[in-house]
Length: 612
Image 1: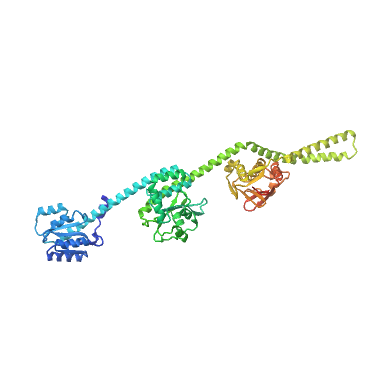
Image 2: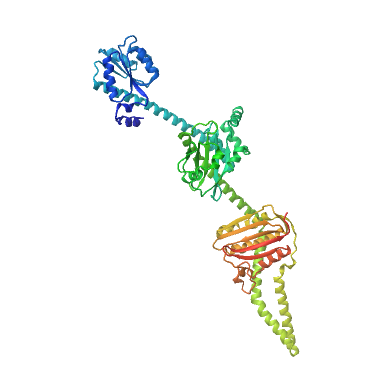
């Protein structure tokens, strides 16, 4: 307070009028026409509004019909004396300046008037310098006293508001610790904004950005749509003694009833994130609150659909944001009672919104953490359940590579040896030579048959088909390669049109085939990339596509040439692709491969027949 008073004291007004508020006047009460004329002339020259009275009755009439700032009061009035008037007006008018005037020098009388509440005491004849000094000092002291009381009230109000916000934030913080799911957090925020123990707004709406930050979407709305509905709600709260703590506890246990008209209205809100002039997007991007009064706000667009949703022209938009991103906005109004939204209301809502933003961000982190935990649990479970299948997949890959080498390194020269022996047998030979040639031809044929049998190992596969949720099976296969996705920086993009597709397949063998195909894509993306997996149901078949952004070509993928190094490490001319084709053939499924110019390779599996 000292600093404030010093600042005011150092300010010198341009005139005495600066010390008066609008419509305030000075009253001169004296029975001397000369005194009245002198003071009236002086004050008129200073442009001070004033009134004059010659007795108590005239003063009383003026005093009760005007906003009086200061009174020059003559002690020796006819009838009721100035001292009596002083005693009457001081108790109920603490902001009234009073200067007593008398024609005689009486120290006891002066002290008595000062003790009774007068601010100064002048004796006649009045000197202009003394009069001006007394007038200025009395008005200045009065202004300081009034400012001091105003500052005290403001401090009390600020202290009360800060105490209120502290208590509210304490309650809300406890509530946020008890609810971690985003829906519960949002409902808790709305309860804090609209409750009687909270910020006391009649209504509140929450809009948040979607996952890819392309649009602002309405999530929840809380509050009445009419005064009648508001009355019912408030009566119910009073009758059931529902304080904020009880409301927050209910939200933590069961949530709030969301099947309401105002909630459905809120969910119609959809704003493109690129619409920068829209009031909601502008507030979010600039991270500034916007107060709309009578349907107007500076430099922003207030579209018709927002007006229709609110059906009210006085509301405030407050942004929600974390250090890393914009989260959304709060929209609040006093639709029912129609009271003005003050600067203090907005400041309180901003403080509340900062805490709410942390709760939303905490909820997002909690959700992400749970997703990671679920992924790791799924990976662990799948690895445990399918370790034999992974070993089988590795065997197929290894045998494929070995068989390719056998074909490349052994079969060609072996064919030459066997063919030469058979050719020589057609010519006349000695018996001993002929016998050796027959042995060479027979043994070469045996080795050729063995190689052929190795490469046709899967011809005796027996299927055990059963109805299978195909999307779940695909996710299980993907989970097996979670570590490799993370290690190589591969992003998996799922696009399942229908999560509940059921087809009749041998789940174990199809999963093994999927593992082969997924591994192919992984090995073609050593520097990272995107693996896109889509599943959709057609009229006559179900199609699964696996698209990667790797460097492998269709020619290398399907090649059965002599050098497996031309293809991927897993397949090439190996056994893995042969197994995949044979399993799919047994399911009457069609297997296609094509190059996608801007992505990489697309593998499509078409399973015939209608899915369940």
